[in-house]
Image 1 (cartoon, rainbow over the protein chains, first blue to last red):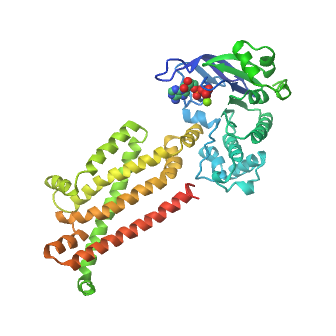
Image 2: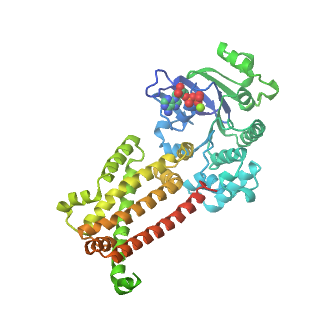
Image 3: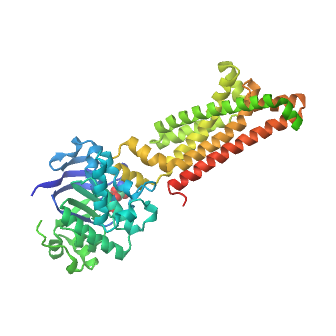
Length: 257
Length: 210
Ligand SMILES: Nc1ncnc2c1ncn2[C@@H]1O[C@H](COP(=O)(O)OP(=O)(O)O)[C@@H](O)[C@H]1O
Ligand SMILES: [Mg+2]
């Protein structure tokens, strides 16, 4: 299976910090996986994904996207090919839902009909009737609806990779569960590579075809949800799992990507 | 008083016209200059603060003193008056422009960069529209301030409504002073009202006000 993202001995240190936010990370993410990155606050999850779209730059090591070193790609070009969803959603409040979703396709100069078609298809995918929603402003939507728009806005230009940083973290439990189901559906249909950051063990196990567990900027374990539950690599992973009351019925397993 | 108006209305309106001309020239130049300076410094907070402080210091110099300082360099007349007014406005405008840009929710800006927008695209499509209410508020403030301070420009032969005020004071002509004041107040009120409407409209548009 082709490698979508590869980290080779990556170190990231923020100015003034006495430690590495990411400490010699080596990682291969296969195409089509939904990788969940799990760890406590401050362990370097956000830093890891922001290195992929060059919001941060690595201090040491290299990162490859489908075999190309990302240092050789203009950050702007790189980002237009990567979907990015953040917890605060970041919808543009002065633009309609339509204009929000059309942002990257317009930057990429798609023609009008194609954009129209794409926006309609995306809104339908997350069960928001296009006629009802496309002319609304973000402020007129609920939190869950806004995050659906955040998600499809990131998908709009068909990126090969999606980066999601605790996208459902601020959403109530029932809505979160629905959003997780929709995300699973989108992943199964699109077969894009997803990198999904969370600090919620249940969420990580439910969504991930692979799970990466981190602590203090270091990888603790990398495997399928089943492997991690059955064979925790160390005491940290073991305590993390036992703290999380993971319902094994909801563990994503054996989907054979 | 009405009789005075009927007799001298042509002079009154001439003064008004001169005044409006000085104010408009000043505002156009001020806004262009402040925009350029803002765009050059908005990404560097320390530099931004420094520039605002410098123009803050300029703003605190009394206008007569500033005229006196500049007359040896730029002479008497409209040019010097406009130069001084432009300098004053930089403080009000740049301070508000920067505050507007800084007030834009950082996660919105991050999302914009994360989607692959260039600096210019983020500035023009996201930051400026969302900063518009504060940008207009700054323009409103500087418009009122310019209409007021421009009266002092009469002391250096720049003309305008200040002529009526100063002539009136010299000759003890109350009507002249009153008409000068009324005209000044009326254009300040009209300009403020128009800009307030624009401000409200933009606030609604960018969703600050519902
Ligand atoms: N822009 C930054 N400047 C300085 N330190 C930072 C910055 N971003 C993150 N850090 C530090 O790097 C570490 C990892 O942060 P982060 O990747 O945001 O963690 P997580 O997303 O897992 O909560 C933390 O110790 C954090 O304080
Ligand atoms: Mg984080």
